[in-house]
Length: 357
Image (tube, rainbow, N blue to C red; front, side):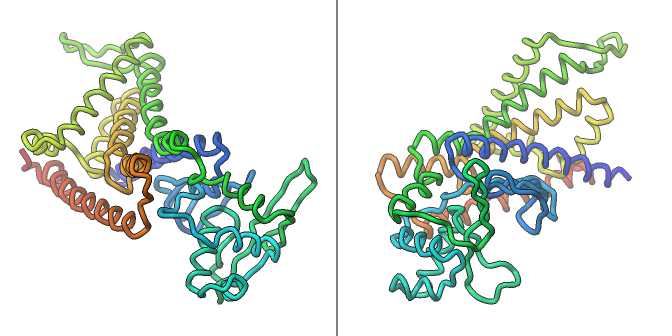
């Protein structure tokens, strides 16, 4: 029963915190007029939900974490065929990549590539599971004020192909200036830290916590909001210092030995829940701080890694291509996989066998 409780609690905690993180990306993107075609609770996959203002909100088959699909974040230089392909797709509504290739005078591979870029921009929907060919359809579109209600795969009226291209491009991440892209990238981290500070206030000021006094008596304590906020910033500072220490060979080993993986967090979630709601919210705040600040690490595909790439592109005036981005992301994922396995082994030794120093 304890194992089931641990799994349930840690899934709830991580799902809420990742959802908050992705909500930051979503809110920042929409504030700047950037399309977000999906905002889901759970890992990418089969899902159910509803669509509002071009964004599908819902729950996936694996409701762990969440994601926001911000349009136009494809790496590298912009596809040179995008304008003509966009006009052709909107003119016909439903198109095959073969026809796009013939119309634009490009190879089938290039046609498929540009159509998937249009899908990433939120202009078209890609092939479904039941589709046998490389078929693409315009997205369903509704504008109550203009009295427009277009079903998926129907032509979208336009007058000037170039004006259409500029309008669609303006709603993508890549069209935004550097500072807006930075805000979109870092908004998730900001939301995690904001949630943490508010959670500290809720836990220690509103709800209060039970603490054992030096006399051995249990006493319910409510801090004033300013002290709770100060405690929140103190935790943020300590966590940030610990993460920075990972890059110091003299302190990295100590920091790693004092850290924990999802296994350790699962064990601790039960302990904090047993101490009451206030302490459990405090636990969520600590995890939220860690999740937010770890995302600042300059390693793709983390937000910090994307931010470093944005800075490089701004200073060098050169775009990082798809192959380079993919290679860095794979290397980053491999690094985190090794770190994750090490941390899991450390937690198993510590919490299961009790023989970790």
